[in-house]
Length: 230
Image (cartoon, rainbow, N blue to C red; front, side, top):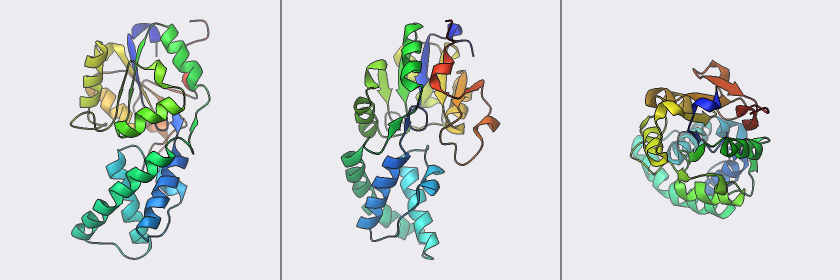
């Protein structure tokens, strides 16, 4: 992917810039304790990340209940979700960033993208109230012209709407706005919005090989987006 053909880049958060699996595991297991439910291992959570907190909570609840032989009916699940959501929010905000780490090459990559003249936006399915403090705590917030969470628009990735709205906020055309993510959600949204897309190889892709996803390229680290000679 030739960065010179782009005016801006939209960067995903979880699994692309920050490894937040530890945060998810800690907050979710605290929530499960509140609900007097069994814990869930991090390797199961990893496959559930990427489609927003609502999807994550429902997937976790379904998993632990099914594993315990207590698969609930729809009404029972909804009642449990209503109890789970405020518990999860409270615990996640309390530990946000404490069990997470910035991936190698991210800071260098963001610096290089800005030095290349690109405007940057962070677009994540994570709630905005979780995303902004996380970026701040990891020293990444200053790189971005705008940050949009999964609750910023009517629909989340893989719907193209968030990308189109982010391009509008950046004042750029989709065809000249690179999407950088870690999963099929990012790639599908980019394709539908008309944005080029590059995926990192180390993130969360629902347990599937990321190189099998339709994308314009893959990088082992974010700093590889900008050639050293650029």
